[in-house]
Length: 253
Image (cartoon, rainbow, N blue to C red; front, top):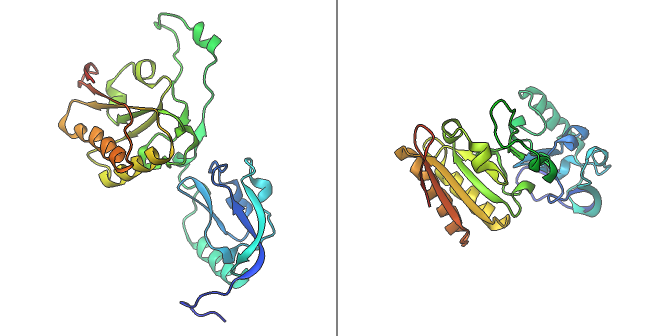
């Protein structure tokens, strides 16, 4: 019997392997694993403990992205008793969606065709306008650096209040851009600096536009993005836009 603190002996056996590049964080595999071995962490499926995985692969058929497969390698043996304890503990916890908060479920929306864009009315009075948002989530805190919509993106970083103040946000700023929103006053600055550093390191960002309000507390957002860029050792073209409280562009540089 292995005591706590002892190194568990590994054996050659079958176990699940996850291709994080293919995983879209849908959470289907989590509900498909009766042993509770899988969990969505930072937008990707993870094996929370190899001792919980029986290697039978019941979760594979639940994955729409073919991100799961069974491999044979050295791993700690399957521990049925540990699984029972794990499941009993989970039953006592408050129920949540398998992908965590639904706000963190990664989605990419279809873009209007070139034909549809060309045939849009020139004047927007009394015409229903379409959202320019191409993805979900949009909060900086909820977007993992590995989110597929970040790859090669032109990034639009918004201070939260700009979305309310700027009436033509979708038409004039969001089109063709990936949006990230946050509040430099109330959110964790260091967490955001690290998030942007990770994004700049891995996503191949083409450009960044940062839009903030004229109030002093908003001025921290461009600084956060620049520090993330510096931490990643990158020099990505960046434009700063400052909006008045009435939604007028005061500065664009």
